[in-house]
Image: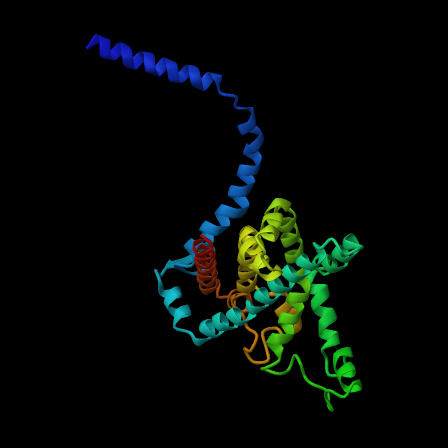
Length: 301
């Protein structure tokens, strides 16, 4: 019995000695950032999750309603319309990834001169604020804007087209803006991936008699898996949260033709003042983002 007590006391003393030997300075330096993260990120997320299960009128008037808000949102046609519009809007992600990869492959060639200049010019739209870019494109795509003027000048159309007032053309027009803005970022990510591939891999493919397409298909593309996953996930999350460009150019219209989940969330939570339903929509957007990201990670394996 005494031996057991002595052994436990020795182990306790050993643990206390290890704790005294730990350098706590790094944790002290990180502590402010942890507190900021808890305050500005985790707390709002937890509060929004709690609010989604309540009938939140004011801070002092809160009633627990369970999953009522989720049931109301999921049975409303506008939510599913916004979800479909977000899926269509995400096609811009695919287009911007394809164009970004194509530009990266071209600029990664040794035959191209002035690569830095071309990269800077292509990346410039990403630096431009999305609101500014959306306003510029709104002017360009008005009935008497430069796009209609050019198309009429070369004889493609006879009368001006209402790009942003057409339920059919409004979404493709907004997608053009997002592609123009994001293609430079995707190109930069793919350029970094291409430059990390060893030259010996391409030399081995050349010796094996692989064509350029076979080399791209069986060597380059598999080694760009990480950049592809990054750009795909960021693009999908951006499409789900898509709000800025759409609100500036169409405000979700005409009708609900361009109302994505981000615009729907804004209209319900802030324009209508239904914070509880807005919180439920926000939680659903978060879950959709997590599910899509997990699917991309699983497929990439």
